[in-house]
Length: 327
Image (cartoon, rainbow, N blue to C red):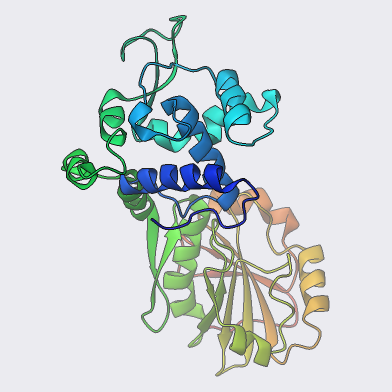
């Protein structure tokens, strides 16, 4: 059994039962890499409380039907915690959420179909899960575990599949594939990379893409450093940065869905941050539709470019001494 909690100050006895609880949960498909160590510890002790286990898995019960405040009381008494009674909603929203989704713990009364207002309703082990964990640490464990998991996709697999479904495949110039998370903002970023840059990018290399769920999804730090770009942790990073070595143009692109375009203030801030940059700066605001563009027209800075995904062959130039000159 591996050690899941390495920073805990709890006694060895309590750490042991917590690690055993997490070993059980991982073995039935609960994802343990999505939580912090403290989050794992909280999930484990709440699971132990619901299971009525303090040290002996053979004593596990599916008859407790505990309310969240009762869970806190049991956890504080048996597992060296000091959780506030006011944190009862965290039990439902965070600590037991994955176990309930996976049907390992049920929020029901004396029977699985109990009504929402049933006074006996509370958190309890699913009977099938209880019948499994009473075998933990025995010679029958592996056989029972295999039977329990047979033809039952784990929650980790289901969540991974869901994440894969809810992604937008993107191909960078040069053929490198990426996966952006689902959302209109990232749909527009896909259009910028696959439609705008091939038309107007003049052999651009994409140096940075900020996914809505991963701000550092794709980043070419050496190339940005060579151009004397500002610190990459800075909050002012545009959505997409691309560089045309042929023209020595650095494209700073905002994909506008709910946040603003390349305004006069935004352009001024970026110019100030990039005062040492070796490339000429090209400021671009991109929209999915003309209707989106119309909402932001008055905020767009002069001497910047506008591209609209539903009219991909055209640019709108907000006049000034520079012109992108894609043709």
